[in-house]
Image (cartoon, rainbow over all chains, first blue to last red; front, side, top):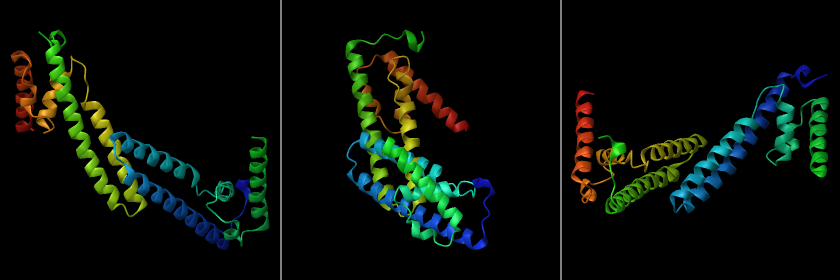
Amino acid sequence: MTLHDLNWSPAEKKIARRAFDEALESVLAKVMAEFKRVANAVRTASDMWEVENYLRQQRREIDETFDYRYSQLLLVFARLIRDGHLDESRLGGLSEEKRNTIRSFLSIAEKNKLRG
Amino acid sequence: MTLHDLNWSPAEKKIARRAFDEALESVLAKVMAEFKRVANAVRTASDMWEVENYLRQQRREIDETFDYRYSQLLLVFARLIRDGHLDESRLGGLSEEKRNTIRSFLSIAEKNKLRG
């Protein structure tokens, strides 16, 4: 059984979409707050180009992270939980198999961090 | 006689450097004011990425325009005068040959605009 073979029921797709959108909103709100803070503190041209760098990096990271393909979604959710953008409880209603897969990704990530 | 063959005296280099730096300061101040205005008006993520696009475009244009090679400088000055970033009077002290060259560039640019 690979991630590609998992079947997503209509109810699970709805839960996944909502969790995904909420996490994206949460990340965007954090980036926006930080953007407002640094933009407000800009005094020199160099400060201004740092804001450009900040925005470019954040946009790239968001584009890379938020990949809504069902073949990627459990990995995406594991990453969002690990980074504090999604509470695991938001995924209640997904099959045990899917939730266990996410937990195993989190566990692998945790072990890699300990080995770090 | 090409732009590459022009001789720049120490006094002319000083005048050129000052005019160049003042024009750069002027452009940066305008970009900064506009940046502050749009950053302050940001309400959505999409607004925020537009600020990133604005900064990237401005930085590229500034990098392209402000080329301080003596072989390019008269063209650069003509462009800055045309775009309202430099007053021709700031170049008093450059040789007549150089000032005439700048005026001929401006005249060509003006003709192209009329044709355009």
